[in-house]
Length: 329
Image (cartoon, rainbow, N blue to C red):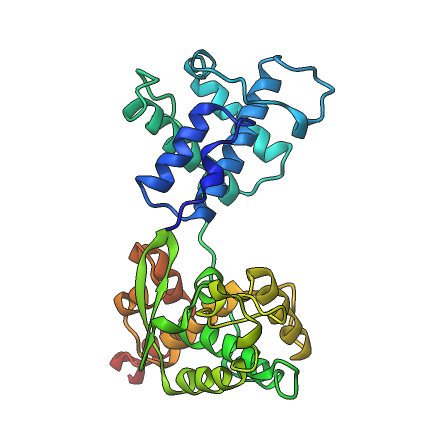
């Protein structure tokens, strides 16, 4: 990862947070997106603590609370009850879901572990007894096979047909994350394989089927028309925007939403991430793909994350029960 130098010198946040974020980027190799989420959680946490401990006026705008002056002594006095008060605040005043609060707990645990084991600011870690909200697993939302075909058909005749069709094809066939798709470089495409940078800045190989290969070839032929206007830094980007730059995540989100609507599907329900779910589900339902292979395809660190797809095909379970030989008695 090319670490963002701007994270090194932010005097609006505590020095301890700055040091922690730099540690995540330079030593742990966390992605910029992950580091940004940690930063947002910790800013919220320290603003809350200043308000909670009466160090600012109660009528102050929460977003205007300055936390750049927090020192080691302030941090040493943070207790387990303070941490639970923050999680309660996130639930009752920020309307955070169990998932969002669990993420904040994970941020706090990581931060205080760093303070106690790496920075040596704390002798004891107050998050050791901090419990995380229980997250109830939910079946993934995905398009059916017919809905997927309708989505692809919705691209026909559009101005950026070849590019947008290629985007949807890669989502629906390879199960990529949005960040992985916008980061694709042409130089990383070799025959039927594609190397992408996934979550946690980890590189993995994606295997392309013939429809993906054809979609990429067709788009690259059209893409050549833009190349003279593209800056050197973006020339290797597979997907280009109408402004002749590497396409942004927001542009892809808007593009997907456009075709979801055109295909008469629920644009609030289906997002680029749901297309990733769709690819995984279609592979599991129709491709006889085992869970370990699916884990590698999706780039999941733990197979437990992939197991949500084992619950989506009730028809298989129904047929399995019917196949019991005692069913014929």
